[in-house]
Length: 232
Image (cartoon, rainbow, N blue to C red; front, side, top):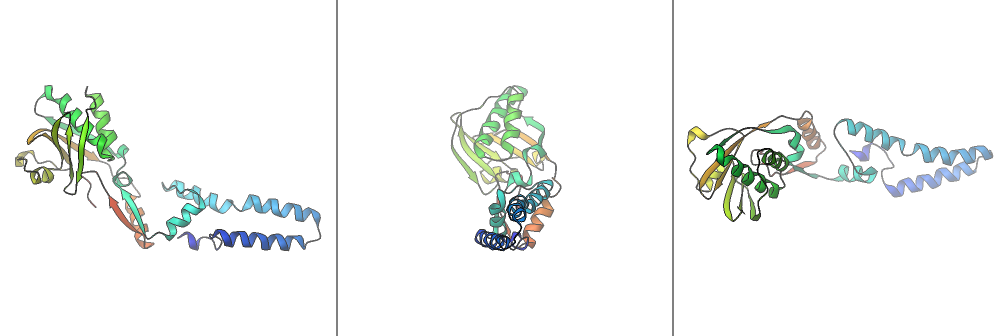
């Protein structure tokens, strides 16, 4: 809690303390001291905040200045996105099952386009995979994100469903049990499955500790997740 780090986290308190110290300095008869003291204060005041910022940086944390740190300390809720739990660098597409090899480019284009519209941490993963496999972005309209773990949209003029196996079944799309894979993204044109992307997630050290630290500080995370495979 930043309020416990320094008694002068409040700006008005800091200004008042500065005036008080300046008044006391002016009582000292030494001219050299009176000149050196304000300069020393100007140099040393930011040092605690700098040391704190460097310490937080090592833990993978960034805060917009002292006021930002104070706001975080006062906050009792914090928005946590899927990229905070699994950034794109920790996710990769392990394997892809397409209806046919000729259909792979189309499947990658559909998935890459709908994930580009999603704002999910998976967007860059699918976009890069689409380009590597000869796909290209398609027009997306009527995009919707669903609580069941998936998206719907009109992609290239066709209704596309994209999400987990449970979401696809919720949308009335039949998927055989032998095609059920953990941590997988399914995509269909209409009610016909076109491809399955099997994902691999590498946990980031410190995420669990960070969430536990928030809870201990009575700051409760609000999960705003758009990755179909990530659930709170």
